[in-house]
Length: 184
Ligand code: SF4
Ligand code: SF4
Image 1 (cartoon, protein in one colour):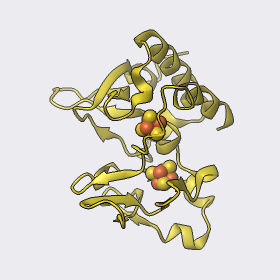
Image 2: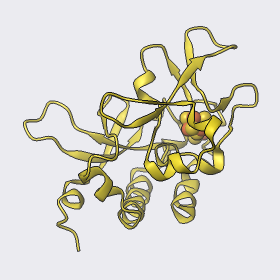
Image 3: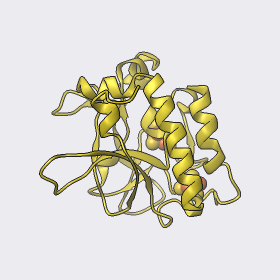
């Protein structure tokens, strides 16, 4: 996934990334936003690391959360080393985390559901204060990589979890054509 990481690094390693530690923790009640792991990502974890996942009702695997020792009312990803704020599986982190601050989401309140690539709000990730054109262009490049990685195939086969749209998501690109195999 090296070049996917490079594309996103343009955004998150920029001067706009304030190292605000806004990633990897969740308010109580937001645990459904913890990252999901695909089969290859699970296989790359050792036995102890795999114990930090649980199986959801849809049969997919998601990171466990634990209570923060430093922030009240906060849950953190079980893979987060809280004091240093480092991911203990950084090199093996799942696509859901690699994509941050981008997300693949399902649009709510539509008769027909639509899947979008989105980016989180400035408030949630200050590194996304970038101009819309840059975010759009990065989004297009991410989509091309996701296609090569077989991501859309995994969605079609129900092997990837898709989050519902939340109010902090900004829509970038519809993925419906990719999911219906209409793109050459
Ligand atoms: S939330 Fe955004 S700005 Fe904050 S540390 Fe993470 S990538 Fe950087
Ligand atoms: S797996 Fe790593 S990068 Fe992903 S949320 Fe957990 S600590 Fe953060």
